[in-house]
Amino acid sequence: MRGDDERRLLSWRRGRALALLAVTVACLLAFHAVVPNGIGRAGSLLETFLPWLGLTVPVLTALALLRRSAVALTAMVLPAVAWLSVFGGLLLPGDRSAHDVIALQHNVSDENPDPAGTARELIKARADLIALEEVTPSALPAYGAVLAPEYPHRATTGTVGLWSKYPLTDVRPLDIKPRGISEGWNRGLRATARTPHGDVAVHVAHLPSVRLGLRSGFASAWRDESAALLGRAVEAEPLDKVILLGDLNSTVDDRGLAPVSSQLQTADSGFAFSWPAGFPLARIDQIMARSATVTGVWSLPATGSDHLPIAAHISFTR
Image 1: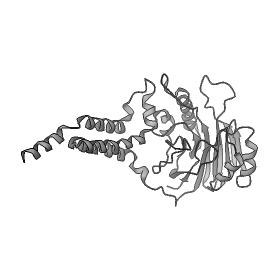
Image 2: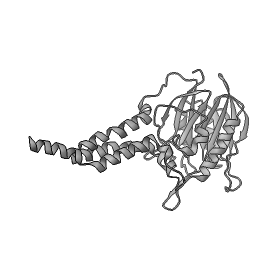
Image 3: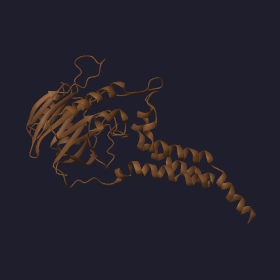
Image 4: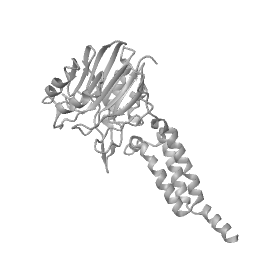
């Protein structure tokens, strides 16, 4: 009995480092907002890939079992609970039954080898609104020719475009260009869609890309500045109902998107990772709304782009 007691006692003494690591992961999940952005924008980098911290739970649990550490196994409850409290709702299926509008968002890539084929794939989603980014002048006629029969109303500016089953009025560019980017950079537009549920302001935006480097860290200054400009445009929008469609190069957890995400709602179910298309790690393409409910969001099959398309159901009656 004395030997069993000693082994049991040792099991509580082993694995303290694993237990500390589990507590650290739980704290990062629950209190990611306190991670500073001052050095390499570490906070934004963490928040971009925050759901993937959940993978540490099975790994640490396996190590705790190998170590036969009771304290480490007990500590694993903390990151598991923290992850479920933050992301558990996204595991639930979205409500695809009740909706007034289906919206689709896709960065089609300026290197897309088959614009017409991509457009044909997008039509299969039967969306009411389709927003595209990285539409080059040479590819625009192909997208337009395929989409026009189903989407007779179109608005384009720069490299972004909106195709709609509803009439579009009051189309104008959105000024989301950060300082330091050369003239001619135009990646935002605003239009009024005359839907059966009333006029809806549709904003289409493509925020600047971010870069990750050993010296620069998570370089997102231009993206953050553009997000602030987009947030001001949403705040100044006179119409009550707003739908935002865009490649925001940011997840909704990233504090860099706060000027936008603080004003708009997105689906609370479904991860719908959209980038990179080959092995999606994050949803940086967004469908968000004001005075409306995004009841579900999902990713669509790959096209010729490095992004997956995403689609969402939107209800104005909830």
